[in-house]
Image (cartoon, rainbow, N blue to C red; front, side, top):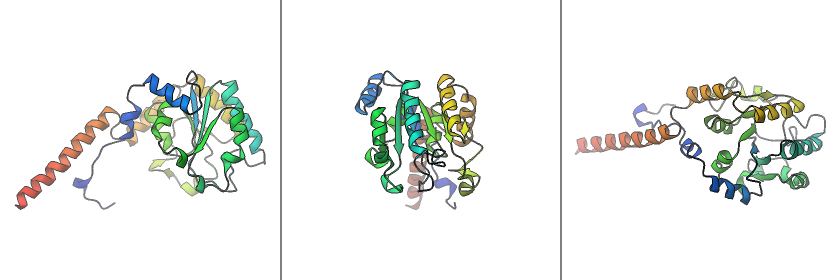
Length: 244
């Protein structure tokens, strides 16, 4: 990008310091209670990030034949009753959407006690990531946080967005997605269930992708931050001293 290499700080994923810190059971319990969820249950986070428009609807895969409402209901029931888990629906800022999807399906969310909100209503991401056990996403960088925590991800809807995204997303190739990639609604249910039953299934792939793309995670990232800032500050100090 044209920046001098000596002015770059390589610190890895700083957010992973918190995400990989020991789980505080009381903090988790209080967070889930506050969001209207049951701390005794595991949690699935649905967090898509592509731009939504009238063509796509609320969930990719679900709008094509006009049965989206039916499928939203079925998915919420599947997660909360069949799997007996919490479900969080976390969308981008409300202004990004062609309509208020959460308002549209509020009755369904309330019926199944689903926590549904837009990012601008609750902007702090890391607690949702840390206290969720599984992710249903798309090509989002959110996937990477779950890879770092070695938590399962089910990726939905590569089409019709492959052409738009070309061959990469956020610097990663589309082939570097660790977990199921689904293009069919019924497959989504099957593969979410399998991810719950077999959470370690794609663990090796998740770790390989983290190793490929991220320099430092967790404690290594903390050490890198301290080391890089010391290098940066001391180099500047020495240069300034030389000028004098």
